[in-house]
Length: 238
Image 1 (cartoon, one colour):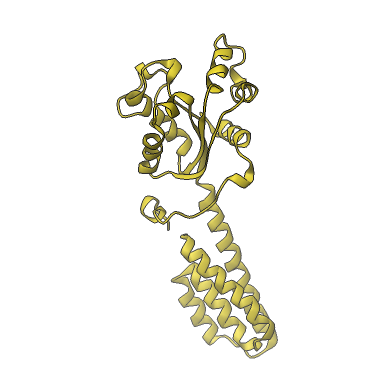
Image 2 (image 1 turned 90 degrees about the vertical axis):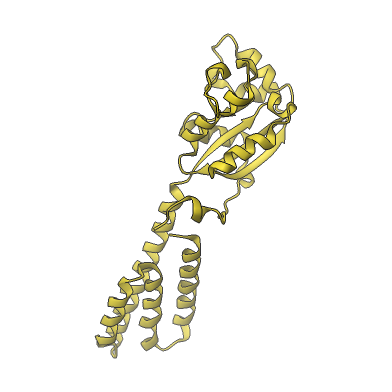
């Protein structure tokens, strides 16, 4: 369901609730049917036809139509909108100090944008070594852990959150293998990096990691939720 339809239905629902306080009861089923039509489209014809034939003169019938049409429509509308929103993942992407110093910010951002992913948070920071240790906590037993943390805290890092269907898995494909020498041409590391110790970018490797890294680097207020005008050309929305 598109955001435009969702907003239209929301306006209808609000108008319905407002009108119900003052409008005669015999008009309520018509407003409810209109709200239902926004959601169910073609099905509304049969509902409207039924309402025209139904005995709507008594209070019991009108109350029944009020509840039957309005509230299921509102529930369906909300659930369907939330279902579509739930399909959009978020992942954490960081351009490391070497990528920033080499002037690759625009190049890397453009690759995610061209794919169709949406940027919902971005900032430039110089992390402390203690912060870098939190970021790489899962590697603390590795011999290269200390050097890894030193490097991440050696200069500015561009921290980002990207949103889209399959963004975690495909974001890793865009980035390429950890060792640039093993990265396919066309990937960020395959095209722009040479040595594994200077592989310019980091990306979350799974849903739980993405959730933890986003929470580490960003406060909830820094994450923006919005609808891109390009989404209708990127996703199929029934």
